[in-house]
Length: 125
Image 1 (cartoon, rainbow, N blue to C red):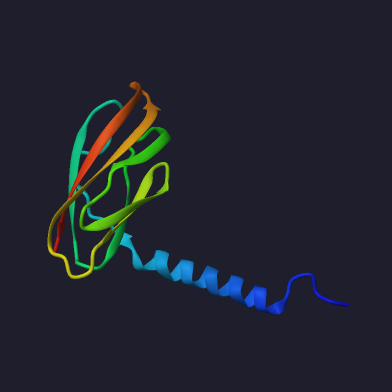
Image 2: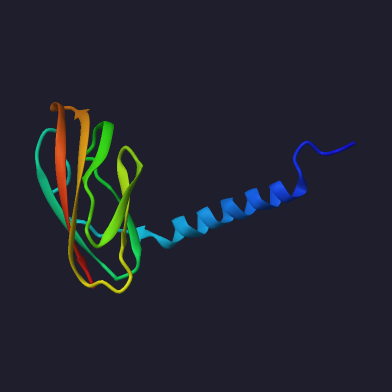
């Protein structure tokens, strides 16, 4: 009787899952300062990060985010949404200096519904 999933496929799947867990563990929490998202309001926030590293952060103020998108990518790194209410920023190895990106999030809280534009100013050291 042949197994339904080849052994090599199971090994490959395990390797992918392990690599994903290691990658996620390498990103630490971004120490974000400044304004946090309030639905319907434009905000500014910022954080410092070491060159070539990654960090994650959430951006809700205590409501429910229905939709989110990166509306401006950073020039010296990359940002990706992990879900509707958090992101991972990864700085470009070897680069030091300023960087910035913008996330737009639409959601609702006790004050109502709206779209927030959050500009993150990053200092890469």
